[in-house]
Image 1 (spheres, one colour):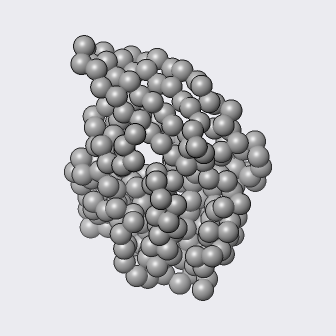
Image 2 (cartoon, helix red, strand yellow):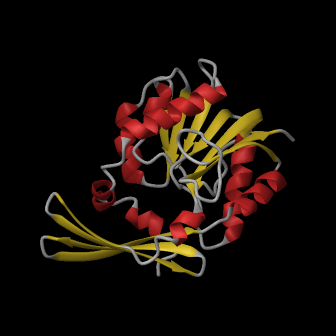
Length: 243
């Protein structure tokens, strides 16, 4: 199984077709709740890490924040660049590479854009890069799946037809990863992709964040920023660069 699956899958039109239903309204409510909690000042700088086509970057920028969106997908960044302005920029960036030093007041990593790499050292490296790129007292906003819920979804099977393209999706748990197998029938052309995300527990994040130098300020369990518990929809961590 391709360990760099994300380099291929995220750069396809099929990926964007499959996930085009993602709810912008819910995402905007989530960001509004975060901004009400964070109270950023106009002109502060934010990094949207793994920004995709930039829909959240654009919305953050509309709130008078200077936003840089980065993503590994060249096609996604090419699309996002259509929205650029004086305070909104997009770049191709691998999160395992340096994002600079003391540049950002906020770094957002939203909607399960973590845990893709085979080597756990790469996950730690990403956290170190984020920490380095934040200004002193800067805030890291991290949004991940709740592994407890995902484990219960093992074996689910879904069929969809979108614009004449058939998607057949199966989820499995294997070696502490959730794997989504995606079989596509595009008018007779058959192609297969997969998504693979580590099932990382909240305790690992607590230890890794604190070891990196972060102080965890809050842990929320959904996009309404209600407290986290084992049955929560999401795992959302707000952490400050304090060392």
